[in-house]
Length: 223
Image (cartoon, rainbow, N blue to C red; front, side, top):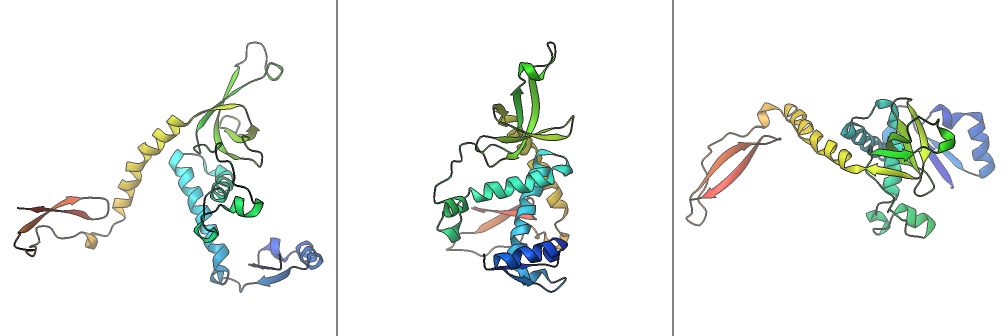
């Protein structure tokens, strides 16, 4: 790294960080306060990460304190997806020179079941733990699991996923999101119905309006 452009956050202007950059020969560039457009590449990427985390959180109805796990998972998935600027290669492959394995990717927010070892439970205690998948680790096939009762996140490996329930939850949330979006559409965007149409090649066309999410849908029928 030759240069680092950043805002004036405390983590970037601390004496310890200044000494680190000086030792490593990294040139520091601080943008003007309250002008994030000067660091537009990083700000745009941050917006994409936060946007993806917001969708993941509300799609599965997860609690807000899991925002860090959601952002980390969003970055992990994006690093395993092809990018046009890299010639449809993944950032993971561009950095390590090897195509990553994606067979371990699962639906975020899926319920997971884990076997409790004998030495970790008493004789009459449950032999299975139920949690929620909230991310990955640097080791493939290791997963971060959240336990709502204890509000703790742990790392597990030998687990069983129930992705069907997470997919069903996502499909059930979609109509509600569309309904909320419809309320945000200004009334002046709605098109007038029964407008006369021009004749095309001697064929008279009439239109019938049908309400949709954004205004109204126009369906043309030739008589």
